[in-house]
Amino acid sequence: MMLIDPPAVPRWDRLWSHLASDTSYDEAHAFAAAHGIPSRGWDRDHYDVPAEAYDAMVAAGAVPVSSRELVVALRAAGLRRPKPMPRA
Image: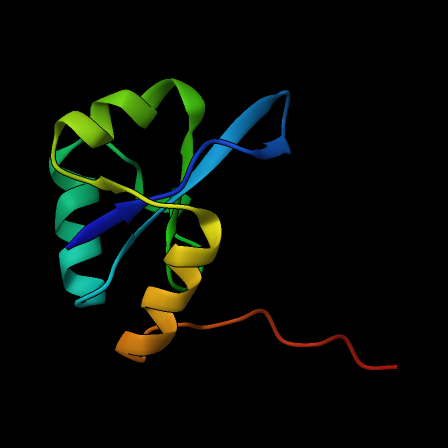
C-alpha cells in the first residue's frame, strides 16, 4: 500500500510530503513513475513530494497518514533506511 504524510517539511520555498510503500521499494518506484514523481525525489526509503501534488497522490490511491504512522509502517515492513548519524 502507498502511504503519504501531510505536506509539512519546508524546503526550497515549498512544503513537502513523504510518499512511501509499506510493501516494497519496487511498489514505491512504480507508483511514483506512473504518477509523474521524478526519480530525483527518492530519498533512501521514500519520495519527497511537493505539497501541490499531495491531492493527486491521494486521488491515485496513496493513503493519507501522519508522519509518525508512515515511519512506523516503514519500520514494521523492514523498509526504513534512516540517515546515518554524523561522526563527532
